[in-house]
Image (cartoon, rainbow, N blue to C red; front, side, top):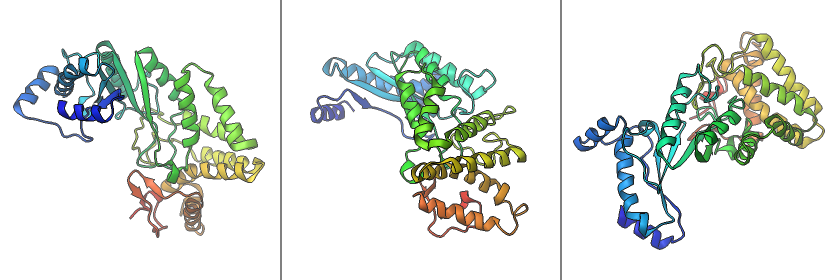
Length: 347
């Protein structure tokens, strides 16, 4: 490994960060030596940090501007009991298992309480703590992901616990699956990275006004309602929640109809075709949620002679707005079975 780093630095002498990280997934070494160390340290981070520290000792004087980056992710998320990362080691703690309906400070969200404890524990032993955060639903890239109520308090929590950098992994397929609020979310996260204590409502409203035009206030009301209606009654969301999970949105029929009217009002108020198309594109997330639950106009019971046509129109609008992907790593079928719910429109 040290020889590999030497060759990398020879080719990139100004490099300041090299990543020594585990593979994605849940497979880790269970040889007797690694297993014994992990058991003694209470986490697989024991072997990982021990390994990275050994390499860091080699690079410390040879490459004084270089830091070695590693994950605290999945099976390495919990810090070791006694091993401390070297000063030239950066740990990137990942929020993979978190709930994104509630902030990290929510005392009644067990997943987030545990993650907050891990942040506090890592920050007490690691000089260079980073966060790898998640801001989309990878199972339903175009579905509602009502996390706008957690973006600011979570960023503030990071800053207040000695985190020095944040990577926000959002919808990296937005160029071909932007049926929700990828642009708004990217804007807000970028602004929060500059100033976690800014006027969040003013920033959101300013973006909505410029992006959607005269109908922006209806979309803001939709965002507020869905933010309020996610994660209710002790339920929790994840980065893979299904659309029929009441944790995502727990709405009554009259609330669904009210939101339908909000979107129609936003379209009616649009002052030009650019703003109208942006409203229509973002509305796809709402329509996608209804179609997957067979609610409202997508219900064979409530709309027996029209629900299939609504599915067909949704698919046509996917095509119009360049939406080719339903979920991570899966392109939408070129000829989907439109009588099925949209999440099944994949080969």
